[in-house]
Image (cartoon, rainbow, N blue to C red; front, side, top):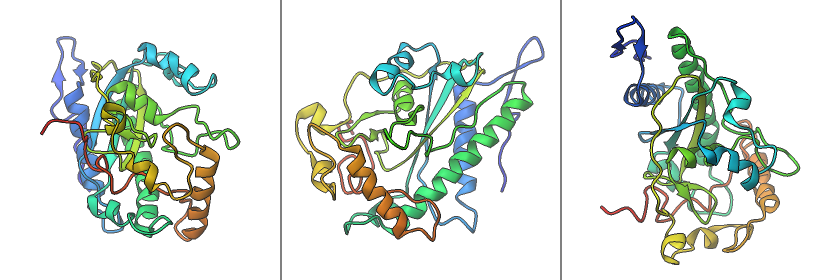
Length: 275
């Protein structure tokens, strides 16, 4: 697997140091995922990722303690001198998503995509960490999932909410983040003490229901009535995830479902974006 280093295309500063900007980091992440998917042992295919950046001083990080949980972490809880959070969305290939449309239970392809993408996120974060260390910067390795309270079913580091802060998208009625490449995929994040210019959030809703009061297809697609227009029963949802995990136990930990994400106007794209 050939992967370009951060050293390639770097800018040399007057003091002999090197500058890394959003474009270079974005290129690095995209190339890593492209090369990763070409491995023979990898089943899952991905579309090109979206990468965004947020400043750790953004006031929304502090509001997550009110919105999600008082125990939700700040970037500086992971790294005292943190400057930037890198958030990225890795969209599944359309063929993977379409495999999960029919039936009550998660497809084997969707379960495998979940497991392999979680591993991809871990490997990508490790790679970014090594590359940043070569330039004397630090970064964190935060798992893609299973970092939540098993009773409350609430995470102390929500990749989705952190991605929202970075401007990756907005939340749909199904509680998934809708990006310009839809909501079917996985989200990861990296905290670093490298200062990178933050991306801007768009002040519009990507969800058709929240924007125009129409659609609600995700609610209709929920297979165990956990999702309603005005409520979400996370424990009932988790019951379905655990059932699917048992169903696909030969793959590894696959507590998935995804039925409320597929066959929707927002599955592959931002449905309110003008074409």
